[in-house]
Length: 379
Ligand code: KG4
Ligand code: ZN
Image (cartoon, rainbow, N blue to C red; front, top):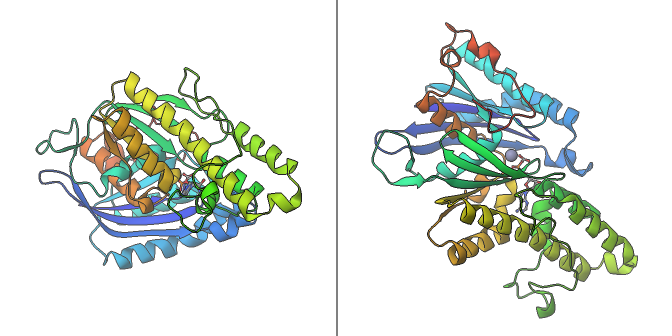
């Protein structure tokens, strides 16, 4: 079956067409995956400006859909999936209303999708196999339960226990800024532009980079805090890290703080401080809760150093646990992950029946955007 998905939770206008094959083990073919980024527009604000993003979504949605349909060679569509939350409310509504109107016109069922769950399910797009608990097909499981999921994006940092498909418990989350937000804000302090994650990663010194003097590679003389790392809970806090960066930056003479050496040292330390906290808390949860799978997702999961260090720490510390991270281009916001998540819900018929039958049922009308949607309560 072919799923058309729409995603507008933040500043990317996304549409995707995914072909799902479910003879024995679900596998997916990306027919098209269009992301229209508003990065340039928001760069001058150093973050996303919601009313501007909403206007851009409205303007871009028809174009992005047309491109997705053309690139996917206009297949027959069977199902529509749309992100309903969490995210920026005005942005979410643009996508939700657009998808509902499409469902009405095309007389197709529509499935609401939680954006955080979609970041988790992004891991299944390129991995044929089953989620434990699905009755169809043979084993060859991709996700075995319990799974510990870390979703790290510009708006969220959540550590989630997944006991089964659709069975979630948020173990902890950030009390203030999200990990991606910390990258974005500290990059702004250093004058590195938006989005901050890739900008900081580019400056951060890789141990293997030969163009960097040895004394700067992989270690720095700047020492930032690792907020809440040894606290017993699974919560995070990144605003103190941002403040520490600001204080250090302001304490340096202008000549020093604008130097290549300082920027590189600081970027390396910011990235490592975030990585240390994320890995420590996730592995602690995995050990305590006897996880069989660790799942990473969200824009920050595109960070090369985070991926590398996660992999090696899982291997050393919990070697029997499977580690999943999506390909980099599927970590940041996209509608392919929305489609795949919608498909699994459709398979499981978790969605209220009336939502799946248009226009006979009226349930589709109840689909609404919810900026604060919690993964525990969705669907
Ligand atoms: O998941 P996403 O695309 O959007 C939200 O749902 O928020 O995540 C965007 C966030 C931004 O904060 C961006 O700076 C961060 O992901 N990001 C990265 C990298 N690529 C994107 N952070 C660190 N390293 C990266 N390579
Ligand atoms: Zn996201």
